[in-house]
Image: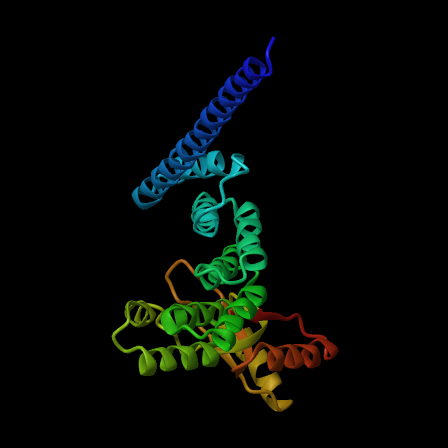
Length: 270
């Protein structure tokens, strides 16, 4: 075979290989585009379910997208929807895990502060008011975006009420009224109805009013600020003897310790 024929044959093979490689590359690019569009559609479906309040369907769609390891666009938004959906389903452990992922792995995410708020809310819903309060305070201290501040102040007022810190709750409510007078949270805060509550120590409950007054006088003679709470309803027959009207639980605990040492049975209210 002549060199010319050999060269021509090799050229044909090379051309075929190039065409095949080109076709494979085009097919690969097509697959990538198709997959990307498919998962983008799945993310859009998740958003629709989220906005409709169908949180189980939202979870299902989000998990489908996450199962595709090559998909990375808008993952922080996806995780945020997933965290909120878990929280709405009262799956607080999974919700807190998801919010932690956003906080720790998406440092520059626009959803980072929302995730911090969500994490605080999971603590609040678990009745861990100290952890919730700490998380809310971190948002106020570090946030450059005031968008969430009204809501954070409202949450802090709620935490203070749950912990019995009436004065602190009132302070948060006053700041909310002052700084965000037209906010939705300010209107919500009005319904908190922060009362002028106090802590007190109950040392006895009697069906006979004379016995209650006798104990009350005994305590007064010892220097305690004591009083009798009369039955509030027709069905209630007990006269309750209580000591003190204090602003903080700490002061009330100290008062309780003194009364215990003197032999009185005690119970703190509220």
